[in-house]
Amino acid sequence: MRVALDTNILAYAEGIGDTVRCAGAVRLIEQLPAEFVLLPAQTLGELFRVLTGKAKRPAEQSREAIMTWADTFEIADSSWTAFQAGIDLAIDHHLQIWDALIMAVTAEHHCRLLISEDMQDGFTWRGITIVNPFSRPRSPLLENFLKTW
Image (cartoon, rainbow, N blue to C red; front, side, top):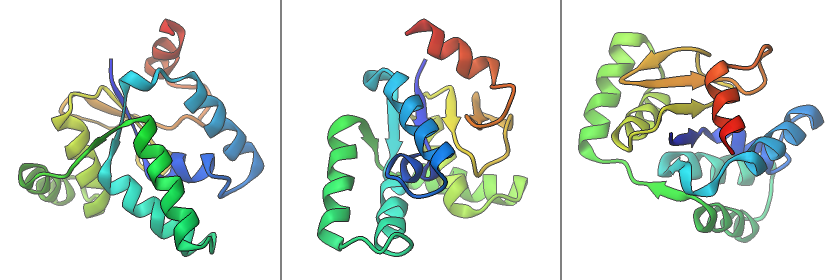
């Protein structure tokens, strides 16, 4: 099974947010086998914006963080097909276009889970289920995936 990470999980792992979520994101990422994790390129662009904007980190330091994530996990580019699916998803399910694009890229790369705090926990589309890792009880899909490793 493959999983994708949303921007908010990466931002928490970078220390942006409350200590409970930041520590939880780090623990979660440490448990995930790198070879089964996908980062849609969109998430890294959004993370750069968060690091330079909200966190006010220097651009060079933010770039280094982005490159570290890219060196750690597979990056998936946004294709025109993914944009088209994202637009349909945004219209049909009233999602923000950038969240819909992340979902479409995740689907193109055959992921089963999209780990995100910001999207609707439990929402399923084209075989992908959005899982909020901070909800309790934790999703059985995520628990089973973590138990495998």
